[in-house]
Every structure is written in C-alpha cells, then in structure tokens.
Length: 351
Image (cartoon, rainbow, N blue to C red):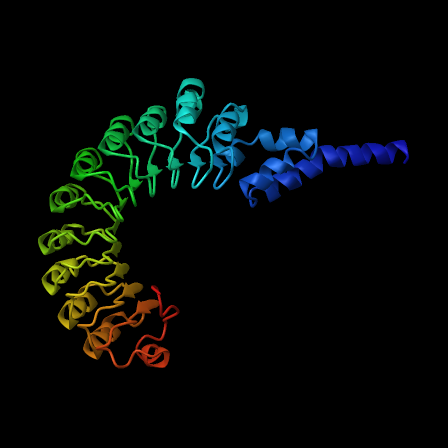
C-alpha cells in the first residue's frame, strides 16, 4: 500500500470509524457497547469520552455480579451513572453493597434508579449501605425479597428523599409500619407496587391513600384481606391511571362505585373480584371512559348487560378485555367481542 493510501486509511480509522461507532452505540445494549471498547484504541477513546453512553450499568442475570459492579463503579467512565440494574443477578451479596459504600460512594451521587429485583441475599443491612450513598434516587425496586423488613424501608426513606417509584412486590415481611414510612416521607410518590405483601392491613393502606394523592399506579395484586372501606378510599387518587386489584375478595360494588370516580383510569384489573356484579362494572364504564385495559376474569356475577355499557362508553379505547370465566356473559366469543369493541387486540390476560 502506498504511503498516501496508508495515511488515508489511518485517518479514516482514527476519525471516521469512531464517529460511526458512536452513532451505532446509542442503539446497542450495554454488553455489546462494552465489547466495542476492545475493537481499537481509537474507538475506546472515542466512546469513553461521551458520558451519555455510560449512564447505565446493566448486570441483569449476570453471574459474579457483585464483583462486576464494584469493578464497573471504579472506572472513570461510570462516574455519572444514573441507572443500575441487578435484576436476578447472581452472586450479589451484602458485602458487595458495603464495599460500594466504602469505595465507590462518590460514583453513585447522581444515581436515580436501582433495581435489586430477585437479589435474595440482600437484607436490611444491604439496603442501608447502598441507599446511604444514593441521595438522588428516584426509582427503587426490590421485588420478591423475603429478607427485607420494615427496618430496610426505614433506611430507604431516611437516605433517599426523592423516591417516586417504589416496587416492594413480594416483600412478605414488611408491615403497615413500612407504609407509614412511605406515606410520611413520599407524599408525591407516583408508582407503588405492593403485590403479595401479605402482612399489610387496612390501616397501612389507608395511610397511603390519605397521604399519597399523586399516585398514578397502584398494584394491590393478591392482597385479599383488605376491606371494602379501604377500596372506597381509592377514590381519593384523582391522578390514578393503573390499578391492579386481582384477587380482592372483599371488593363489592360499593367499593367499585368509589373507584369509578378515578376518571383517569386507563388500566383496571378486577380478576377474581368475585363480589362484583353488573352494577359495579357499569359504574366503571360510565366513570372511566379512557379505559384501555380491563380484566373481569373469573367474575361470575356479571352479564352481557355490563358489556353493553362498556361498549357505549369505552369501545373506541379498549384494546384488552378479558371476560374468560365470566359464565354470566353469553356473548364472549372473539367475534362477539369485536362487534362491541372493534379495537380489541388482546382477549386473554390470565390463563
């Protein structure tokens, strides 16, 4: 190759290729983005020089995740990281979070989102350690952790003042005390998932409903012991868009009448709410005209009458409607439903 051609190729590799890789990198998963760093020194320097590419650390389902996290946080390119995802990551233990606190605390000062879903080896001690170095945290998720107790939630509210999205789904050892912590410290919270938090009672949830009026999403899946009076208080949530009450065995039409006052509802799950009848669903049809998702799965007390009411007010919005197991509804075939709701795309949510 002639000298001039070699020089052009070198210039192309040094200037053009890194620019192309930078554009492509914005569309790549983090693991592939990290692999690009190994292609050449030029590409490494180019990609590493753009902070916007290194705002997230994703070690979902990775093995040796604890050591990987500490190594990543020690790298200069992650000094402004905003998201850390360790969902179902393996080998993440309390000792790793304590090391993060002692060695990498400055790196997490801007962290906004932390996902510890399925990290079963983390307990209250780990939550205290990691939240103590994340003052700007807004989103915290610790799905299905049976080691976390009220003490861990106390540490969270003490250390992180700006949480607006909290997922405690499956945390079976938190009680009403945790809900009081949330109600007292996060009145502006918008998303709250309490699925299968079986120790919660009416008292705790009432605190949430009275204090957290900005809630847009509330998941109470499989909390069968709550009373109708508590469900009636859901009407206080004027901004509510998503509500999951699957398995709410004590929910009656009276409670549903109050829920129907949440006029912004887009998604409502009433699966196995066995006390609900046509009257309740008709109230929903008339009050929640923006519904896109509705599940009535397993409710035997509803009939074609409620579908007719839904069709009159929600036919132009509903894309998901599950009436499987509703033996009182005779016209529930796919063709029958499409005649009433022409925009339906999903006919079965539960199996």
